Length: 168
Image (cartoon, rainbow, N blue to C red; front, side):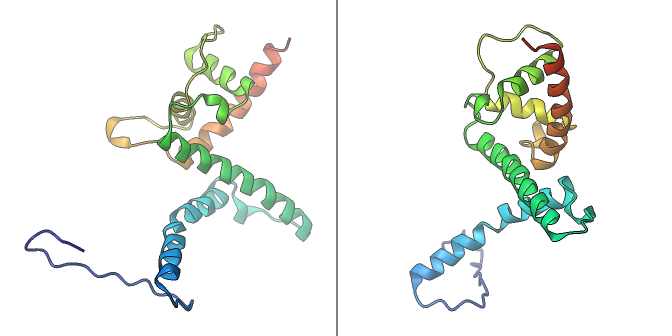
């Protein structure tokens, strides 16, 4: 629109096979196109995290059931990733069960004593990412779905063990 002085303006074209007959439609399709990154991240989790391409099912109904579960997993990871970036001060209960956050806290802090206040979404996301190999250096930026996926896989086992020793 208004490039800096001395710089030639860029003009972008979004090619589509869809018929666009109004400015409102053009804006709507542009918004759809902007969502492609999230869709690519869902496919990344399905392919890399859930290893969907490695699954060998003899029957289509088994594939459909697996896809139903895998899509929930992909959605949950993306939801936590982006919710943390928008509002990391939320209580962690928005994405975790009581046993999950308690097991995580105990494991990370090497203690059986739990805090009086529930940790924030930002804190638990960093801890889960840490379990997944995230180093959290200043230049690293916020954790992404890959380290969260790896962290959640470890947290599942940690939570199961915590439940064995903390059943009332």
